[in-house]
Length: 403
Ligand code: SF4
Image 1 (tube, rainbow, N blue to C red):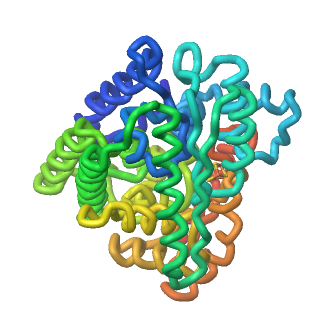
Image 2: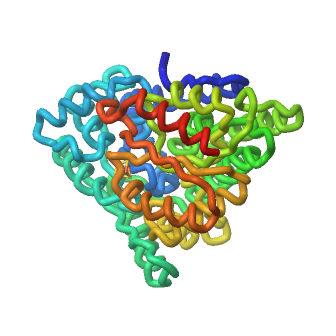
C-alpha cells in the first residue's frame, strides 16, 4: 500500500475526491499535446498563477518526487542519476526527477509529460537552478529563471520591485512561448481563485487548533497536493470547501485524528514520504498528534487581490525557505503557541540543506524560549537508504516518554 494512505483512525472521506482531482490533473497533463496545450515544469514555490492565466499546464517535479517517494520507487530512479554522475549529496527530488526523465519512469505511467518550457524560482533553494538548467539541456527547451532575494530581516522595498520586474519579464517569456497575449483579466481571475483556495487551506489547517485535533500533519501532507499543483483553478476551491466542511464537522462531533490525543506536536521539514504510514502509526499509538507543520503552512501565501502583482512578488519572496533563522524561529514559536503544542519534531533532511542546516540552532532557540523539548530525526524525504526505522522508533518512544 502506498504511504499516501496514512494510518487513519478516522478516515477522511474527502480523500477519494482529492485522489480523483489529482488523477484528472495528471491525465490532462499527459494528454496536453493532443489537446493543443503546453506543459511547463515549475518549482514548487514558483508563481503558477501566470501559467494558469496563459492556459499552460503546470507540472511539479517535486510533487511527482513525493509520489515516487511514497510509492517507494524513488531510490531506483535516483540511482539512475547517480550512475550518470550526479552525486548522492544532490537533493533526492532532483536526482529522481533526472533519473525519471531519462528512463521515462516514475509514479505516472510513462513518466511525467514532457515540458515545452521550464519555470524555476529560487525562493526555495539554489539546487533548483542547476537542476532546471540540466532539464533545459536534456529536453532542449527554454528556461525562465526567477530570482528572489533572500530575506534576512526587514524586506527592502527594492526587492519587491526587482521581483515585480521579473514577473513582467515572465509575462513576455510566456507570450513568446505560447504565441498568445497575456490577459490581465485572466490573471486576476487565477489570482482570485488562488487567494480563495489559500484562504480555505488556511482554514482547514486552523481546525487543528481544536482539541482533539481532527487531523494530523500526515493527513495535511496528503491533502496539500491540490494547493501545490492546482491553485488558481476553480476545482481546488471546491475541493477545499468540502475538506473544510468535513473537518469542521469532526470538530463539532469531537472526532479525534488519533485514538487518544495526549500530546500535541509540531513537525518541521518535508515529510519522510516512504515512512508516512509507520511514523503516523508510531506517533498515534503513543498518544501524540502532529497538529501542525512548517511545510504545509508554506503554501498558505498571502496574495492581495487589489494589487496581485505586488502582493505576489512579496508573497513568493517570503516563503519559509527564503527567510533567515531569526525569522524562521518566530514562525516556529508562533505555531507552537497557536496550536498549543507540547514539543517540536524536526526532520533533519539530508536532501534539503536550506530546510535542515539551521535546525540545531532553531531547536536550541525553541527550547530556550519555550522550555519545550525538541526531537530531531535524521532521514531523507525520498531516499530510504538514509533511514533506520528501528532507530527512529527508539528515539520517538524515548522522546514521548520525556514529554
Ligand atoms: S533542496 Fe530542498 S527546496 Fe531544494 S528542491 Fe530539494 S527539497 Fe526542494
